[in-house]
Amino acid sequence: MREQYTLYLDESETHIFNPAIGGGENYHFCMAGVIAKKDDSSRLEAGIRQLKNIVWSELPNPQDIILHQMRILEAEKGRLDIKKYPEYSKFRKKEERVRFYRELKKIFVLNDITIIGSSISEANLKYFYGGSGRNKQDQYLVAMQLLLENYCHFLCTKDGIGNVIYEYRELIGNEKLRDRYYHMKLMGSMYMAKATAETRLLGLDFADKNDNIAGLQLADFVPNPFARDHAGLNQSRPNIWGTLRYFRYDGGIGQPDRFGVKYMP
Image 1 (tube, rainbow, N blue to C red):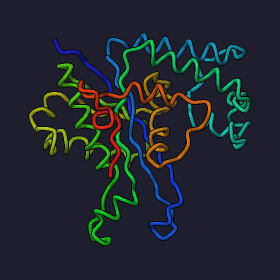
Image 2: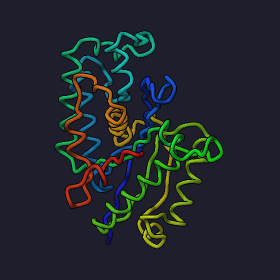
Image 3: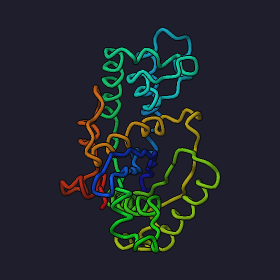
Image 4: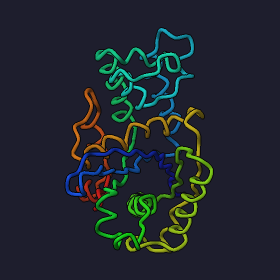
C-alpha cells in the first residue's frame, strides 16, 4: 500500500525598491510549505501542542492559540494590536522570540518533514514574459506549476500519493486556485507527465488558520523567509532560516535549489 502524504501550503509576498523598473517596488511572491506523512500527523500535532504549552505556560488554554509568524513580526517591530492579540505581546522581548524559535526548530528536527515551494519575482515575470502588457501572467499559476512538479517528483521517489491543504483565502480566490490545481492534475506540465499527476496527486482542500491544524500552522513560518531571501532582504532575528534551508527537498541528488524551493525567474 502506498504511503500517503500531505503538503500543507501557505503564501507570502514581500517587496523591495527596484530602480531597474523605474523606481517601483518589485514584489516577490512565495508559495511554500511542509510535506508530512499522514501517519505522522499525531506526532506533528503533539509537537505543536508541546510548543504552545512551553511558550504560553502562563495561560490556561495555550492550545487555543493559533501560531502566526506575522503576529510575532508585528510584536518585534512594535506594530502589534495588543488589544486584539494580547497573547503575542510577549514577543516584544527578544528572549521570548528566541525561546519560541528554539521550540519551533525542535518540531522540524524531531519530525519527518520536507519543505518545498516556489518564489516568483513579479516584476521580472512581467518584464520578461509580459509582452508589453499583452501577455498577462498569473504568479499563482506559475508558482503552483513549479511546486506541483517537485511535489510529484517527491511522491515518485517515495512511491507515494499526496494531497494538498492550502490556507483558506477568499471564496473566489480558492476556486481559481482549485481550477489551476486540477488543470495541472489532469493535463500535467512540461516536467510532470499527465499519467504521473493523475496517479500521484490527490485533492486540494482549503482550511482556515483558525481550524487549528498543526501542519498549516507550521507552514505559516515557511514562505516569508524564502520570499525575503529571493528579494535579497535580511532575515528577521532570531529565526529558523538555517533550519528551513536544511529541510528543503533535494530531489535525492543534493539539489535543493532545484527541487526544494525554486526561485523564478
